Image (tube, rainbow, N blue to C red):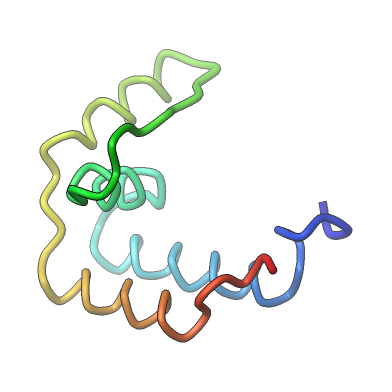
Length: 87
């Protein structure tokens, strides 16, 4: 993994920050990420992959989750600071 572009230090640091934001707001990183995608009109479809029924439940329960403006601002801050950490 570390040899792939997603294993770069910048990408891992961004992922850790997103994970921390999710936990600070009482949700899993998966729920936050899917809620973010579901809330963007620019995202035409969201592809999920699951290996367990629990993962499917978590993914479908993310539908309808509204992220507070404060959290969206913090997500945007990470996005703007790290633009594309995988490049």
